[in-house]
Image (tube, rainbow, N blue to C red; front, side, top):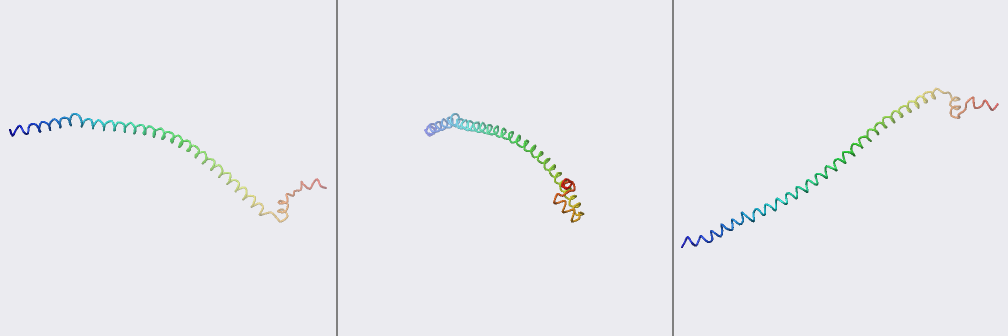
Length: 120
């Protein structure tokens, strides 16, 4: 009698545990698997988009580097021109320092012997 009291609840418990192990727990794990695969697909999609954006940005960087190189060359050429102009200006100043007052007057008045030759 004592043994028969425990057999029914024990068998019901074993059946419930069997149902849990066979039907409910694998179903939950399968739910997690579908969520994980969905997340992986989303991550792969985002990764592909980032790869495309990275390629576009690499192309822009390449073009900007080319522009930067050409601008550097222009700056170097401009510096050479500025240096040449400064040298020429300094040479003119040195020559003008040696002019007498009369020569300075003629220089700034744009007066030359050729311009007065026709007036006589």
